[in-house]
Length: 124
Image (cartoon, one colour):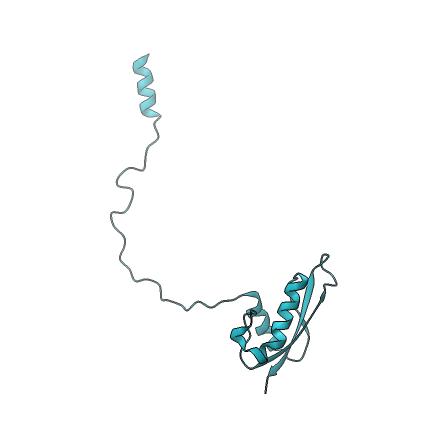
């Protein structure tokens, strides 16, 4: 019976991957062509779309707390004075003029605020 049990355990053992299943060395090939990384955050994309239709109010598709909505709207309104590098909203460019308003969201959850943005063009 012991001989039969050892025969069963020998046949029921799991085969390991063992030597010979992995490549011996890495394949030599050129790396992919580097592509410059371009940030595509929500505001970068949204402001590009809003620029295409200037002097029309657009509502952002995101909701914010009261403080965040007020800060984003303030940053957009003051970009022509402060410069794009001093604004926390990504996607604005130097010399642009924007108007922005924030208000309690008409169709969102409680205490969530919407932002309306209008591109005014290049500042003088």
